Amino acid sequence: MAEEAAAVRFSEDDFYCPVCQEVFKTPVRTMNCQHVFCRKCFLTAVRESGTHCPLCRGSVTKKERSYPKRALDVENNMKKASGGCRCCEKQVRFSWMRQHYKTCKKYQDEYGVSSIIPNLQISQDSTGNSSRSDTISDNGERANNQTLQGDASGHPTFKCPLCQEANFTRQRLLDHCNNRHLYQIVPVICPICVSLPWADSNQVTRNLVSHLNLRHQFDYGEFVK
Image 1 (cartoon, helix red, strand yellow):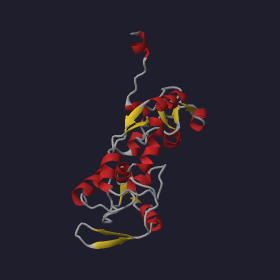
Image 2 (cartoon, rainbow, N blue to C red; image 1 turned 180 degrees about the horizontal axis):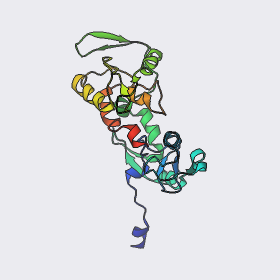
Image 3 (spheres, rainbow, N blue to C red; image 1 turned 180 degrees about the vertical axis):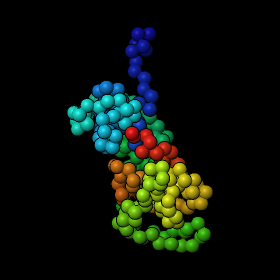
Image 4 (cartoon, rainbow, N blue to C red; image 1 turned 90 degrees about the vertical axis):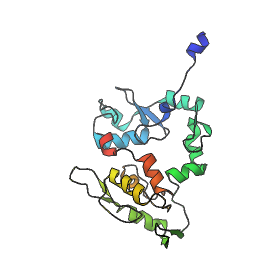
C-alpha cells in the first residue's frame, strides 16, 4: 500500500510546453509560480511580455529572464514516463518523443517537415489544374511576406499561401482554408508559424488545413501578454 502511495503518476500534460504545445525541450521552471516551459519558448516569451510569466503573468526576476532555472525533475520524469505519439499513437518515452517525430510520417504530414523537399513539386490545385511549386528557398522568401500588417484590433493578418487572398486574421484564415482548401494537399509554409518569434521560415507542412486546425486554435499574442 505504501509503495502504491509513493508511486509517481504522470499526466501527459505534465510534459507539454504551454507556449509551443510540444513536448518539452530543455524544460525550465519559473521561481515564483513554478510553471514549466521549453527554455527557448520561455526566453522568447519574456522578451515579448517583459517581467511576467507567459502563462499566469506572475513576476519573473531579472536573472530568470536571462538564465532560467532548469527543471531537472521534469527532465528525469520524461526519461521514466511514456506517452502516445499524437499522430501514430506509438508509445514513446517523452525524452525521446521529439526524435520520434523526425521519423514519424503521420506526424510530419500533420505538423510539417524539414525544409528539404524536392526542388520541383507538381500538384493539382482545387480546380484540377497542374501547378509547379518553386524551390524551397523561394517558398521561404514568399512565406516571409505572408504576415501582413495587423488589423484594427491589433491582431496580425495573414495571406493564404494556397490562393494568395490576403488580410485574414488567424481565425478567418482557418475558416477560409477549411471552406476553400479542405482537400488541397500542397507543400507550403504556414504563414502563422512564420510570424512566431521562434519561427523557422523554411518549415514546410504537407497538409496546411490539418496543420492549422491542430496547431493554431488560439492567438499567440493573446496567450503571451
